[in-house]
Image 1 (cartoon, rainbow, N blue to C red):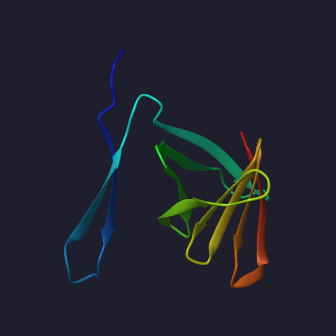
Image 2 (image 1 turned 30 degrees about the horizontal axis):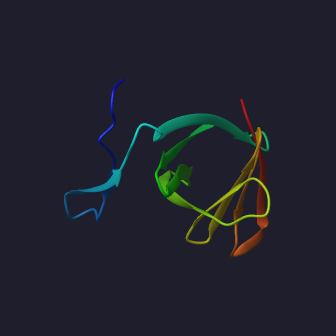
Length: 115
């Protein structure tokens, strides 16, 4: 059996127009139960997009594209389904359905479904 020793999440971001690209690596302890999966979603008729889910020990993350940026969402307590938060954004999933909401704009609610 192949043993996973670590998962590294690497993000590239442009700091400013005047400076070079910045690379961020977050090492996560991993074991045989760790996983990285992808799901394709469509929200309210918009173009489909990919969400990556990273499950590694106590860390459960979702990488969701928001307005052209890849945002890291962290799993938080929810009564039902899986709830992730990143700044003002909340990403909820349950089964094949999902919801994206900006907590600063209550009219931003988007209903999504995985393909």
